[in-house]
Length: 302
Image (cartoon, rainbow, N blue to C red; front, side):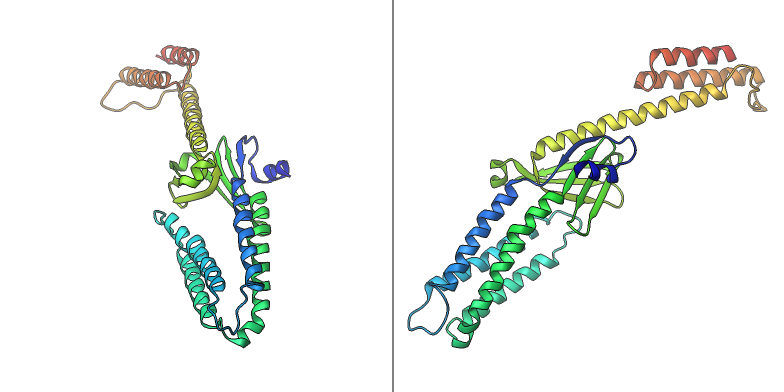
């Protein structure tokens, strides 16, 4: 499946340097937290079920409060904190989740002693159980499997989505900076976020929960340097070929300027060409052999 994915996504002769998914710890973390949520729902369905009572149902109050705080913190406050430095913060959904969680907690607390509410409580818990099972346990496995963070010899590629695929490809020459972010928990399991800063339409693009983020950052910078050197070499060789073609022996020279004799103009062209060739040799764009060949052609012309 990975080979078919690469064939569809990559350009001809493009080489993959790494193909990463989100950290596998993200799935296990979901299982731990999701398992705790399922235990809480079972307790709310049995021992701490709401309804008319002469005593305060502290178990119900505590569990409902923990679930509400979890949704407010994990899906609201934490995403807002992580996006605070991004150009496109996209705060609508975190704020909406915080508002809904707070309103839901208030409603559940208000109706906890109502007999009619107790009759429909079983349905509410079963709905919550399937939401946790599908959204917190099953979906992350598929999302992890179909997510790819790819570095090639030319581009950075992010592909996500299970049914609707979303693909973003950023050329290495547009890359300005790479930043990593790890909290204490993420440092223990060696994963974190990688934020790519690019020129043009891409801006800042975060890649979350990537394993070994510092190593990923190092590889990206190294490949960008290699890519830039390759492009500089290609441009230098192309320039040398163009100069050699224009200054071939026996080819009619360009019309000289009226203020200078033809021979003086030719000499200035040759001197300027030698300077450019020497600059290309010093930058590494031309080998010593290529430099000597181009130099000989220029001197033969003069």
